[in-house]
Length: 368
Image (cartoon, rainbow, N blue to C red; front, side):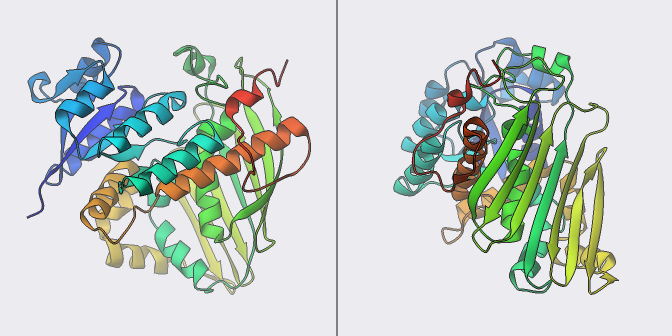
């Protein structure tokens, strides 16, 4: 039997609860060893809500001390995005594999450095690009890549993930350029990752506009962008938090020569529409998903972090493969997002990948 992998979680906010739920689900493969947070109360509250006895998990205020003492197999980073780089750098250099929530970092250069450092240290990174782990996604990725649907023409995504003022006021870093970014960076980046991955071509050009409509934050609560892909296909992107927080919706479409794939979430419920040559393939994909990955895989949309951890553990134990959402996906998605921000700032199209560093901090004062 393979040994259980030890895990520490750095950051005890709302996302950390999903990590703990996934670890408990995979208790035969992973074990939570420690929680790290600058607050003394947050870890205890998290353990209580997760129904884990406080004496079973160590609590630290200093992530370096936790890494040095526990020497975990996996460090899960769920702190504000502006802190990702320094923690990721330390964890990799001290022999840990990383599960990083999106975005990888807040600048194209820092993301590239983390990607390159992971290779240098021979450690693996799994990104919190949750949509790659949803049911049907891997099957569709394989079939689009194989040409089953013909040439990819264009793709679209819209992420209408409303947050009220209470969400942004709950923590001073939310909605700031330095630590969080706006709707495109925080709520839409993993959707961009999925669309690019499904379309199977690299972005080579970005053009974008940003706006502030309702939320009183530094960054955008509405963004729209257009990407030109290496194969000349186009991708359109809409991301906003200026909608109802009771009507969350994220939808993806890939239009192909011989068909159309549309999938996503509406009010927490999955939506699926797969057509090839005028014929619905929904039931075929449902059957194939169950036969390939098991019935339980249909539940990954409820807590995709279970799928992330399961895949990451397999990748760590198998030296020949990378996680489904790996370090390269983390770097590439940040570079694309920074290209979108740079385009909005310069009010013109920009080439991708970026030839010089661009950071979310470079957007400070954009709406002044």
